[in-house]
Length: 110
Length: 504
Image (cartoon, rainbow over all chains, first blue to last red):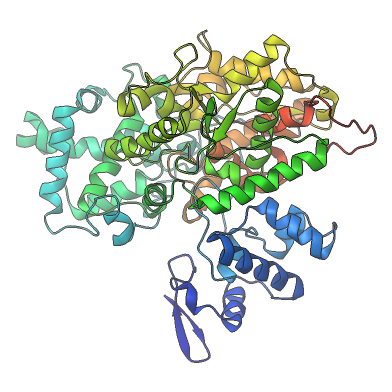
């Protein structure tokens, strides 16, 4: 199971999360997004970049509430809400956006 | 994945049989790394048959209940239509008696006189690799909710058979990815999410800010505070997901207003105990011991559990046996205590001021979570686990309506995602298994205009937020009970803004 990016392959697990986080690139994010039926645009990049920064600092994705608060600050209140996040990432901002951002899947009762 | 949504007129409508409808459905099998972290073999061992039968023999010898449950069933059929997965899928192997018989038929072949010598007469069958995989499939189509057990005239606890089958499978190398990966994270990091201490601290600080922004009152959510009176053990979903996190804000406000000192622990930052789901006592014990160690290290006097269904079952029923004695705690309080017991006690003492109109935008019903309803209690009276959550809800919410009685209290229907099935690879099963509950909800929507449902289990909350949109509800129609408390409570010194929007 692997994604193909510019002639190289990047391994992923059964659910499409890459297994070696250091192999993530922006080009790969586009490939994963395409596989997820999501078109990357400025808003989605904003979310993905925030998730990666947060992960760098804390080794986990942020709570949805924390993500939304950050989005509210940068994109305004009309976009800083759960509903809009699900418009951007229909399978959920935590799981689908993490997949595209090359981060592990949040596990547990979430 | 596309799911076809079952159409039911009544939540308990018996479906037409669909033989083989769910055959071959399997959640992802645990990778060697997730198996080995729990002491299980990484993959199917060459001598799987001998090991599986040895394990079954050990269970029959050491667990009297297991043997009795396998020997006693007379196939009366009382359980056949009691399983939400059978009702939702129509697959006859999801009738509890049929699902149990997948294991019982093998037990009979090797452990009973008739089965050893005349297997064809008594429906006994050999253990083959196909049988193992059939077990893996159908024992992951049971959420161990034990609704069928309520109706069994012999009191057979069918969930125990599911747990035994999963334990045997893990012992020969076929574990479930979802549960085993998560248990590994609890051992390594302290919670199901894999939320490290630094991230936990940052999240809680952020939430403190939110409460202060909302109320103007500084409410603390302390972590690793030595000498606090109360250790709150809550599912890590309460630090991460919606609507769980709104419940956490409710606990914080309740503790604040009651004037008690409390803390969460970064070492035991998880109430859930998936050792129960995989039927493995060693794992259950290890997870429970983390809580004891955290309580001792922090020097607390009491342990209170947050809104988590099976955690409360393990805490209420097994924690003392697994990790006791808890003689170092204050014996004047229940050990352990449920957050709803705490909140209800304080409500009765008149500790809180509520503005119930803050929940007037909600017409509410309540989903009894299976493990709380059928495997535990709250308070000092029988049935407290049903009454106390409803009492708290009615204290903070004006518009409350129960669902059909056959689907609540001890007869409650599973949310469809319990027992280790809350994983995306089982989404089709989860949607179908939720249909009886969703049908009961639709009835109260029709009859009373119900808009929201509350629950006290992290799994129920996540499951409903995912499946409710398939049944015509918004994903935020599922609420935490303490979220309703949080909405209505007026903290001492809170700024009251009449024009404020209460529906956020």
